[in-house]
Amino acid sequence: MGQFLLNFHHFPLPKNVVPTEAEFEAINKQWQDYIGGIAGQGKFVGTQRLDQEGTIIGPDGKLSNAVTDGKGLVVGTLTIEADSLDEAVELSKGCPVLAMGGSVEVRPVLAFDV
Image 1 (tube, one colour):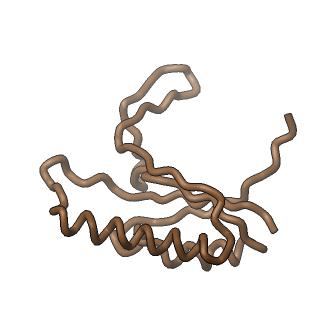
Image 2 (cartoon, rainbow, N blue to C red; image 1 turned 180 degrees about the horizontal axis):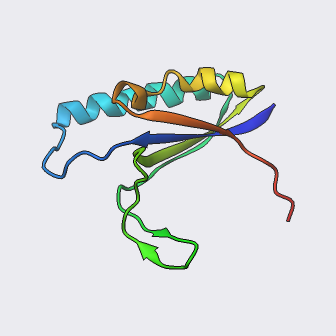
């Protein structure tokens, strides 16, 4: 068994588009159910929700306020345990970001000896 990082990509909503409280609660419930289902299988390690604002530091050391690369922002991450990349991909298929037009990047986590 290994760990896999699921990066959730989504285009940011325009600043003038704000979900209603009912829409926000429905989306939040979808995420809770999705993550809870993974936790119920004993495969949950951790998760982070990320803000839309951020800075990228280029190889030249210069800062950029742009955080998109044409594929959408990384809006959150989920670390899971799975027996294989195929299993991690299957677990990613129920992610709510997919129903919102986003995508999930699944990457194995490599051990880092310090």
